[in-house]
Image (cartoon, rainbow, N blue to C red; front, top):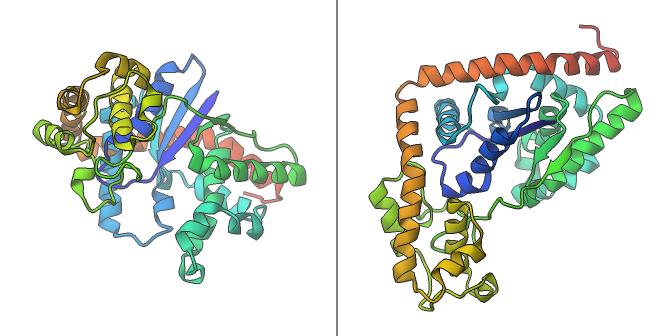
Length: 333
């Protein structure tokens, strides 16, 4: 089993990123048996599909790596690296560009959503980045890819590209399977439970940042949108109460339990009692992460060294697949 997942190096990660993705990565890492591997990469090449400020991209890559380390990714047990340090990603991307079809890419939901009616003004990278995503995955003969609902179509495209390549040129790539974690929660804004928690929200009160102080975390939960009713004894009672459901979901995800278990504990209590308990739990979870992150960012060279070591290990794994793909299409290198 070889699991691979990537994340774009943006700044200021929040509680939604941690509970929805990073915590799941740490759990996968910890569950790996001998001989199994987890690869986690910072998708700095993917970031170029949109305009970037070079200094910010550079800084965010280091900061994202530090955040993953602070949250529990262990570079001794997993391979942590950034794409740009492994040129095989770009090389395989170009080869797969000869296999992927324009029609496949034009039907991608995220392309339609991001480009809208201004597709001709968008970068080629934004249109073709699913091909690079396929290269990221196929390069390592990845067996499983953690995916959410918004990424299922992309993994289907990866499989389509691999199947066509294998059909045209011979068996080259493993077909990756989706790894869907039922435990991964969908964390919503503290101000509007109809929208996901996001760093792009203009209101800082809508999210819990991983660098927030204990006092700020408590304040944000205290002011989080809720309602006047008491908590029910089971999840079904939250069907028409999205803000209440979001806060209960956050508590359960932090505690590692279920919403029903949380409600059995707080049934009949109002948010005057529930919010302080939620804040205390969040502080207990996030304060150690913030402290480790602060220490790591105090030595960015050491973080960069971790990425360099991970890239060297990743490159060793990638080389045989790239060589096989090159030979399959008749390239002499």
